[in-house]
Image 1: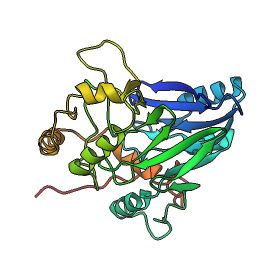
Image 2: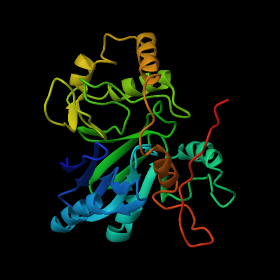
Image 3: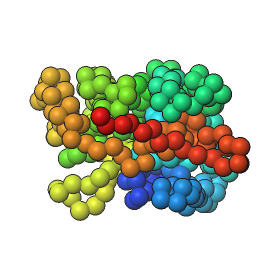
Image 4: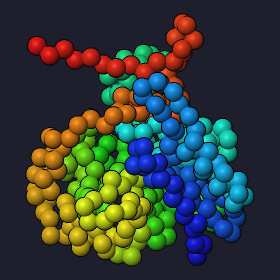
Length: 289
């Protein structure tokens, strides 16, 4: 059985972990949840985080086959399209991205030129679909709840869980975005936690905690089942839903929510330039009576 090379990359600005998965036997690789730097005050993008991945891939002489998104992120811009231009590969996401595109396409009045069929992505994965990274076999699990389109990528002994679950001392993803659902999240988490106890779970985010001084990118199924503060084995579905929904009611919107969703639902492309040649992100304004 091939053993994967797994290299994490942490972006402190968004508390995001991206990963390079490499197959040492063939040199094939995948990149999971890459970040594109974005300064909301100036509206400028840059490639500092993504170029760290480019350097690693080139140093290791890897051939990128896949750029894998666990979902349409609401807290950072994806670096997938930029990395595809530098390294090749196909951008993949769960097939339920279509429902996310429909909701946010309407919210941002993206217009008829914005397709809501997922065609901006190179591959839409079905639940339980399998694919290869060289000799590494990967299985896709549809794990909704945080968003309708969330997926988990499972390799032998490892799972890349996106925002579905966090480190045991932090809990789980929020469920108050459009299409989010606390009961669905509970079911998705238990699907992940039905994997063997020694399975390593790779986080998309870590925000630290009072219990530890450093950020962490991985834990295990067994550790989550034993001690996750929101969803360990002793927590019922009703208890989880009550705690999760109460917590969500107090959460502020992510700082990069509006630009991130508009960019990420397009697979890492800006909205079309307007007549002056400039690209814009829209900000919906809601009047308070």
